Image (tube, rainbow, N blue to C red; front, side, top):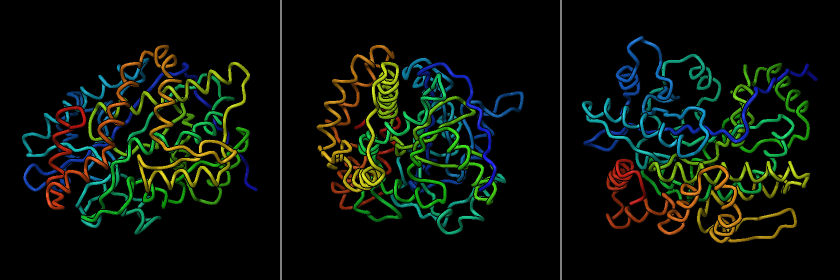
Length: 382
């Protein structure tokens, strides 16, 4: 057994929130992806030549990541994203580039995408080869501040009980390389092919996590902790729990709605810990099955809700949770954003809207791209 690696957990204020949103750059004429991230990043770079704090490079040159600062509320984080989105849009327009949000691009081919010029990305592709090259995917990551390291692993385990709710609502990747995959979130199943991606291990003690990291570094699997790409992972550097569950969102309303739901879940479970209550958990095999069900069936998924194996249709479960979390949302100042989850319940998740557009246009996926671009501009589901 290798020596464990000490993972200091940064001081963080409770239930602060930060959001990261990966955006695709698409050609205004063809709808295909454009390898223009470097040009866009250069255009938004501050005058002093430093990198933009809220607009950054990603694995592929067709992708820009926009992020909020450390915020008190989801609304505040959403305002940061809106500003960054406007800046990117302004830089992209003269290049005849549109912005698109989704878990995957409906018809672009992975083999034609160029990798960003950064050592960590080159290392990833060199190690993971064909699967690494397949990572033509986009996500939304939500960081929630955790004030006490002792809470991090119990909260991780509790969040696995509502993982499927977040994945179903955010599912936006039904198409892959021009084909309907039959899945609501094809991204979820693609991403877990990377060696350190997928569901987190159910560690009970922080020392077990440090031992895991020590073992992984000793055997050359990772060089640093952020190469652990779990769907839910502690972020020791920021003092947060990072939820990397959601597919890329088509519009700002869905980003803030899903982030508010995530934020409320973490705060709800954190409050249970404060009261000395036992947090809900489910066995790893149920968590794995829920991930598959929500990826496959999306809003029609029947999820396993507890360790006893009880099941409930995800939309019914989400509706019930919205009632339970209303007081939490009020406390966190995100009642309006949490209420927007009902818009997704009414209008369907992005994967459903994308398929509806394809059906109306005789399977024409250019039309799906146009609809996604239109939603990005409108800032809400259309």
